Amino acid sequence: MVRRSTRIRLIEPTDAAPIAAHRVRDFEAFRPWEPAQPAGFYTPEGQAERIDSLLAGYRAGTVWPGVVLADDQVIGQVTVGGILPQPHLRRGSVGYWIAGVAQNQGHAGHAVGLVLRVMADELGLHRAEASTNLENLPSQRVLRRNGFSPYGVAHSSIFLDGSWRDGLLWERILGD
View 1 (cartoon, rainbow, N blue to C red):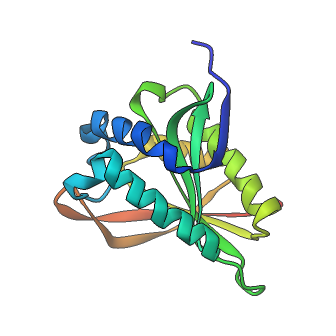
View 2: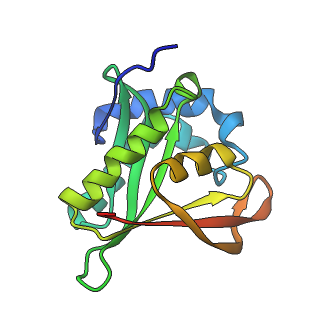
View 3: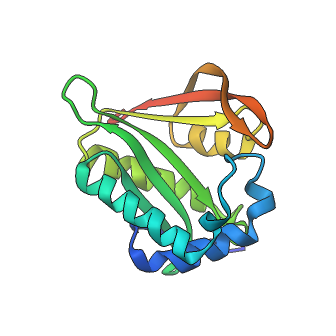
């Protein structure tokens, strides 16, 4: 299958409906990898509230919330959170997901590569961080292909699918 063109852009309020549709359809697939959410999270209204909050964080300089597009259709999200722009820190944490209908086509890897450029060129960050569940090998491959290296394990760090799970911590120095 030929990969459709991948782009990223800042999230917009009009992205709420397509994001909600993907999240409803992919609920079971994402359940092992993400924290439980209230029912409203999976509605366009819940996503609109979340997007408003993300854009407020963007205006405050603490988050860069993006969507992943394939042929101009929203297929996922890529976000830089926890931005610390102070000169002695200058780092952010990358998170991403791709809808099931668009997985295994290279979109996640390309989106992460694009957001790394945003982090370095637009946000002026020096360090990119990420965390994956120890069992999430596809996400780990995405990070490795984008120059991330694992640097530690955060034991019992996130409550997922009914139990506390360890997270594998990743880092990449931007500009390398």
